[in-house]
Length: 154
Length: 154
DNA sequence: TATTGTTATACTCTATAACTATA
DNA sequence: TATAGTTATAGAGTATAACAATA
Image 1 (cartoon, each protein chain N blue to C red):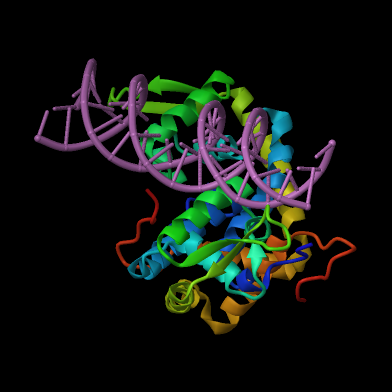
Image 2 (image 1 turned 180 degrees about the horizontal axis):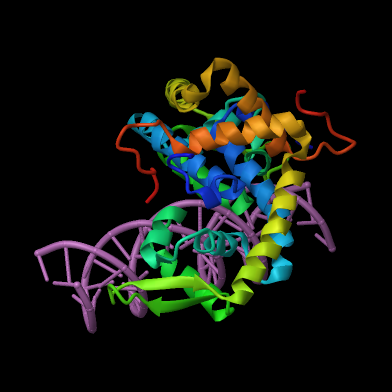
């Protein structure tokens, strides 16, 4: 029998997603905590530090959160001195949100800690199993490839 | 347009779990809605209909939810006439929660609808890919197999 | 008129503490 | 004293509506 999982739920994807996610959080939370940020704030830094400067709304879309949620998220990392809001010169309605030097440093260090936590989380699958699991998860998270967008992997 | 996944997040498991789960809910929610229940209530029916009669607290533990959360959950399905609470003869503090005939019927029909939704969700992986994905997810949800094994929840 | 950021508000989900009745 | 169920309450997390500034 699948020890740990009640039979009636062993194949329920919702249940499995919830509990797998909880186990990940239990590992990744403590990993990023020493850097003063949580997983969501780290994701904000990662989005903003990825490339071109972008507005709050662009960042919110990429994160998959509402723009009203993004306000509090940017507030949090700005108060910690990790990002700065600046008015866009070309469109003064927009905030361009940029990483500070401290933000870049935190992104680098906390990102590494989180990567290690993720590796530990995936370890039971073995290297090849972990790789194909993440690939499959990317497919499922991206959803059915619609005609106008590129197909992620495979 | 953000087609697919933003590079900076493509390998972040928390992000992938969240969005994959959301996509699953978008499919499974409408599938069980015609039967008047949501996914969580269906899980309650599945736990209670799986075998031996059990108390609310036992069912809550297997579901991975708090016993106070379980009260409202059982309330909901009881009001719909799908389960009945009755006092345990051997320990009058306990509620034995049993499926009604309507509950069994709903479990059967809604369970089938949900299974179909899950198959549709996993379809992009192909049959073999879906199988190994679910297997991996079970491993990750159950956590490291330690000797005193209980589940992580709570 | 539409859009960006913002605030206020409400709703969902869940957990903690306290109460009751049983043991 | 401890446990099962319950209630009240509070904390996240997120979404909707409305407003000011700007386009």
